Every structure is written in C-alpha cells, then in structure tokens.
Image (cartoon, rainbow, N blue to C red):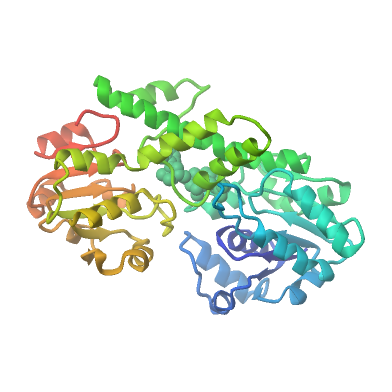
Length: 435
Ligand code: UGA
C-alpha cells in the first residue's frame, strides 16, 4: 500500500518506518525542512533503540522517503496518517491546531478512496470533527478513521511490531478493510484488531494511559505511607502483584510519571470531563499525587541538609524521564536541577543519552557534563539518582565510596539493596523504604 504519514515526531517516524519495513511504500511528511533534510541523509532527530537502522535500511531500499510537500505525497496515498503533536494548552486541554492545519492542507489532494487515519492522541469527538471539516472542504464524505498508538519510548519498535492489540475506530467497511489489511502482518500471533466507533477508540487511548498513570500514583502514595509506618514498598509491591487481578506491571514507585504522554493525557482527560460538567475526581488526584511525587527527592535532600546545600557538590545520575530515551520532557531530574541551581549547589551530571538536551536547557549552570558514570561522583558530597538506566544498577560500592567525599545516596528509583548499602557504609535514601 502507499502511505503518507504526516508528522515525523516520535510517533509518526516510528509508525512510518515500521510500516515501510512491512513492505509498504511510505512517505513521511514534516513542515520542518531541516528535519526532513536531515532524515534524507539518515540523521534521526530522536534517540530510539533500533530506529536509526530501520530508517536507513528502508530509505536505502526505496520504501521510505521524506518530504515537506503534502502535494507530493498525498495524491498517490491509499492511506494518510495524521501523526502530528497535540501538546497541552494553557487550559490543560490538548492543542489541536496542528491537526486542523494538516486537514486543511491535505483536503485538496486527497484521493476519493483514500482513508485518513488519525494517529495523534486527540480528545474524544475530534475524529468526527475531522470528518466534518473534510466534508466541508472536499464536498464529499471522506473515509476518516482513528487508530491510536500504544508505543512506549525506548521500546517503540517492538511495541509496534508486537502489539498487544490494535485499536481502530471506523465508520465504514472500507476503512475497516484497509486497516485490517495494513495491520495483518502484525497480528500473526493471534493478537486482536479491535474495531469500534471513533469515539470509543479515542477514549480507549486516554483511558489506557490514565489507568497506567493511576497505578503509578497509587503505588507512590502507598510508598510514602510505607516510609512512615516502617514497611518496605518492594515487599508490599510484590505481595500485591502476585494477586493476578492486580499484576506487577506499572507498580514501580519512583519519582512520578514524566514524559510527553501521561502528564498531558491525564490533564486532557480531566479537562474534557470538566467541559462536560463532570467531576473527574480520580484524574485530578492522580495528577496531584504525581506533581507532589516529582519533587520527593528534592524534599529528602532538603531535609537531610536542612536546606543548606549551597556550595555542596552533587553527582547526578540519570536525566531522561526514563531509561532508553533522550527525552527530558516532564523529567523529574528537571525539578532537582532547578532546586540545586537555585540553592547554589555545584552539579556534575551523567546520562547515557539525554545530556545534550539538558545542556541546551541549563548550559553552564551545570558545572560538569560527565561522559563517564564514575566521573560524575568524583569528590561529591552525595549522589542523586533520577533514572534507572541499567548501567547504574551494579556499581562497585567500595570504588564508589572511595571516589565520593561523603557516602550519601538519594535514589529515586530503588536501584539498590538496603542491606548491601548499609554494610558498605552508605547513608541511603530511597522510595518507600526505611532511610
Ligand atoms: C506511555 C504508555 O506506556 C504507552 O502505552 C503510550 O503509547 C505512550 O505513553 C503514549 O501515549 O504515547 P511512555 O510515556 O513512553 O509510554 O513511557 P512509560 O514506559 O509508560 O513510562 C511513563 C512514566 O511512568 C515514566 O516516567 C516512568 O518512569 C513512569 N513509571 C512507569 C513509573 O514510575 N512506574 C512504573 O511502574 C512504570
């Protein structure tokens, strides 16, 4: 099939590339000329494991191309995917201006039998509005469907290639057939493709993210309680998870959820409910707990030093909002760095992928950007950990202690065993476990 995928952000680029790898002829379109030129030369604007190789291979084999021109790609397309960003607006609602712009741009070029598929995460009802606008602009009823993504940054290629399910919101057989055909190679392992109304499909996406966010805020609240009552959240989590109705996934306590999806989607769902005169009490609480949790490491540091961190040197491991990505959007590390800078501390940071993004934001307010994990703890008063990259999990504690001025660790991700740290002579703060 011939596909035009509009938006070469994280979702659009992964979607377009993976569909091309499945043998489709894909053109990815973006308004950002520099990005498109870079992609043509194999420069991938984001870090996502496996993506670079896949883009290069399919580009070389002529199945994947890049352009800024809608007029070039859309007239031939059987399917037009809309995968542009829907950032949070000031009110908390999703900002759909990029979606409307795309609909206006594609309308004059759309083939009569083409199916327009909205991949972007959009408020319930948007698909219907896209349908109405296209009807107004083209003078005919176009095929418009919804096909939300469930990709996690860091494992997006695998999530795309081995989905748990594919959700499609359709209003006619034509869209259903095209989406079934397109996804057939992904569903060999008997995973379902679910057809429903566009409204149900749009709500499924928000509800799934909101449910996962709820699990995280819930376990963080229990972790905070564990600290007060002398319980160990790790034991509690495992004790709970063995109940098959609860399960183990998304119950790791930490520094709250970050990234470009959960915070924005929880707020968009809240905002949508409010505009419909509903009281989204759970969603509001999930967000509130998360905002509080994001600064939990800062509170522990502040309490330990009684607010006096000026002149102290902090080693910071992990800046990305989670491992295997360079994404720092809504990352808890930002709260910590902000606090340390305001208080006049010295900061040495390490992250395997996100350092350039942090440098662009903080520049020389951070004293040292370290290429090596151990370089970031040289002579420091303490180490603070924000992200659970694998390379932080098994340090040689003797060596670590010898490098640090004081053996103090603030760990926002529960990477280490309490007993081992105690025996190694560290003062160790973690989440939901005794200090
Ligand atoms: C999330 C969803 O998992 C995807 O299914 C969805 O497609 C995507 O949002 C999206 O809407 O585009 P992502 O934001 O990439 O994916 O990352 P997750 O792995 O879900 O992690 C989100 C946040 O939750 C991270 O900050 C992570 O540290 C935190 N988290 C996750 C926890 O604190 N505890 C856990 O047990 C799991």
